[in-house]
Structure formats: C-alpha cells, structure tokens
Length: 352
Image (tube, rainbow, N blue to C red; front, side, top):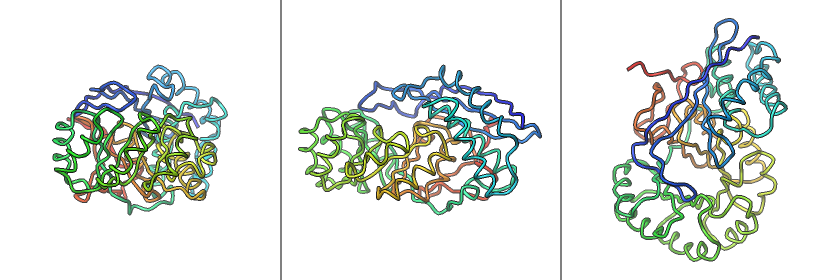
C-alpha cells in the first residue's frame, strides 16, 4: 500500500462564546482534517482536534501525522473481508502506538480516515464495519459558562434537546442551574472540567439533586483520584471521569473511584481505540458517556458509530460551530444522529 496524506486546518467560529472552568473564553475552534489516498485511488477522511490540556497543538499534529501514516503504510493493503479488515485496523492502531506514545488527536486523524477508507472500499457504513448498531441514544447539547441569564437564554433556544450539559466550575453554578431550570424541564447534566474543590463540591450535591441533575462530570483535577472517590462515596449522583480517563490502561485504576467514564475518540486515539475502551469499561462495570471536542461532522460521525454502546451521548461539537464545513450527517427531530447505509462516514465537504 502507498498512502498519500494531506491535511487542511480549519479555524471555525462558535455560534456562541464557549468557556469551560479550566480555560478562557473560546470564540473559535481549530481542527485538522486529514485525507488519506490509497494507491488504487480509494480515499478516507479523518479529523484531529488538538487540545493543549492534553499536550497537543496544530503544530504537534502536523509533525506527528506523517510518522503515523508511515507506520501504517508498512502494513500493506487492507483486506477485503470485514473480519480481516477489523484485525488490520487494530494492527494499524498498534503500529501507531509503537511509533510514538500519546498524541491521541493525531492518531484519531489517521484512525478515522483509515476506517472511512476501508468502509468505503467495502461499500458499507462505518457502524457496520465496527459491528455496532445504528440505533443510538439522543445527544445532549452543551452550554458553556456565562452569566446565569445568558446560559438560561441559550437553554431556551436548545429546549428541544432531551438533555442539556451545563458547564460549571464558576462562582454562580447554582444560580445558573436555577435559571436554566426555570426555562427548561428536561434532563440536566453538569461538567466541572476539574474546577471544583472537594468540600465546596460536596455541599453542592443536595442542590444538584433538588434541581434534577443526572450526573456530575470530572469535578476535580485529573490525578486526584482519592478526591473523586471521596465525592462519589457521598454522592447519589454518578461521578463521570473525563480528564482522568484518557487511555484504556487507566480504566482499572478508576474501579471503585467513579461510576462512569467519558470516552472521547480525540483523547484515546480514534474509533478503534474508542471501541476497545468502551468494551473494557463495560466489562469493568462502568456506565459510559460518549463525548467529543468541538469537532466537525467528520469526527462526530465517526464517534456516533460507537454510540449504541453508550448510556449517555454528548456528540454536539459540530452543532456548537457557526458553520460546519462538512455535510451529510443529519440530526433527527428526536436529537439522534441518523446512521444510514451510506458508505464510510457518510459525510462530504460543503461546496457552497
């Protein structure tokens, strides 16, 4: 096999300013879309969304992608049968890991493109290649930190979603949730992005229960597992690890610490590693939250192919953008992503 790799960097404005507890306001998202072309002309599209918190930037992605493509190219052409192709794709992921550690977003760019390329070559959708189901839970919609009034106004605009994920970790968490609850009757989830302190967080729990919050995502810093365990022991709500659960090998250390795991393909290295991580999380007894960064439809479609394995779905990154440069991936009226029989990811570049 001879793989030709090209990349395109997109800087995309958000619909609304987007802020989380451990970062300043963001008005744009920067992502790298990868194209792989095989010797016979078959193509696949992937995406790398680098996050500085995880040690990745557009610069590191650009430096690492050619090394990863070279490692995969050494495996030769992918097989034409589904079972053999799955084995080949697993070997491709292992080859990338052997070439360089970490760099989950860069690996995701190659991994997604390979899965798209292989599925397109077989004329089947990605979910069928993976052996998952097109029947998936609805996605929630995320609201960043802002004034309580502004968050409530955004909640009203997103009122058709069955669940909202509210970013917290600021001085007005309860006031914000009260304002949202006054205008929105659906399910609430909160994500502190490591922004709480233990005692203060514990004091918030009764108020969160009163307001009908369903889960709490990553209240404390990633490596503070004793603090996470301490809060989970005191909380009737499930604590979901996100920043503490980047790679599959971290899962065993979270047993008895938290009730749930947030799997993101940009953290763990793509669709293949995401599938393995979700299966292992289930074996260990975790509830599973399938999340995303602020990606285009390329990566969201890839992640959605795993959504049938999740308890909760948070695949709204492309919906946060003012304009997604890719199309073809459709959100149904019930807020479920529609996984069709279109080959591969089922997305294409906008031409307008």
